[in-house]
Image 1: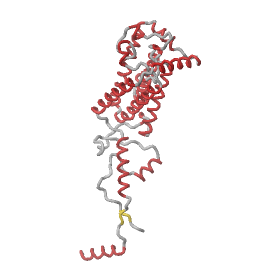
Image 2 (image 1 turned 60 degrees about the horizontal axis):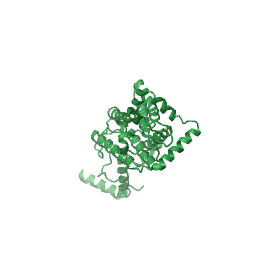
Image 3 (image 1 turned 90 degrees about the vertical axis):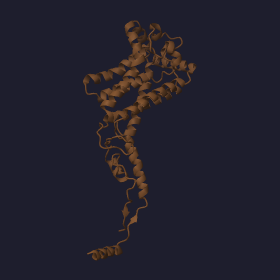
Image 4 (image 1 turned 45 degrees about the horizontal axis):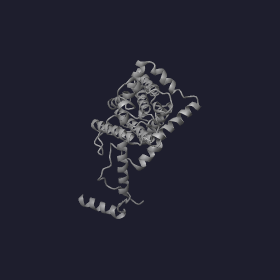
Length: 331
């Protein structure tokens, strides 16, 4: 039987051409590995606590450092403030001074707003990040990318468009509520003014961050009362920044524009808005990152076809480094 088997095998070899290894296979494997790494970076995953704490701390430190390192450009900042004030008056929406004086007449209210302005933008933002980490880990990275990219583009605004807040305008009748009521905690004026760039009012990150918090809570919270509070938070912040004479309402528009950029960048990278990404469900441990991941839904049939053609592997089934080349036979 052994001789018959050998003879049959030799007969087939004589009538069939030898397998030819596809020379493009190594290049295809390299391309697949690159796509695998990309998908691994884009896959929902449970974030690592130590890394997130370090990232947030370093990012906030860099944000404060860069913001305060921007040249103050006092003359340009005051000229820009005069232009914005004139523009608002020309369209009949220069209401900041009226709100500033009205709220300042109620001592308990304006003092509360001073403390609100000095603290809540940091406390609430960190609180939302912690909530995302615990309750929506698969959406955490995409939502965090929105926040970080919003803040990064704001730094560009501080450099390109120095702007004095209303309370520092020459010849205006705005009240610096922190100085008048001697409240603590704000880097905007008082004893802390020399530690902060006084002419970085455009865009308003109080609005950018509070709107990020509000939209995130509204999109992901289940309790109706929490969703309502999410919407009220940026609205209250807008009243506060105007009443304390720290911003024009147009600064808030700048903050919203920065946030829109952040959402656009996150959607371009992850293929979907953060709240539409799937919840994190462990499907395996990535060889590339060492963390458990979940697969993202593909955007549509065209992307499915492209993925099948170019990269059959996923982040959870990485390409084997030692995979044999595909054998190709001539017809």
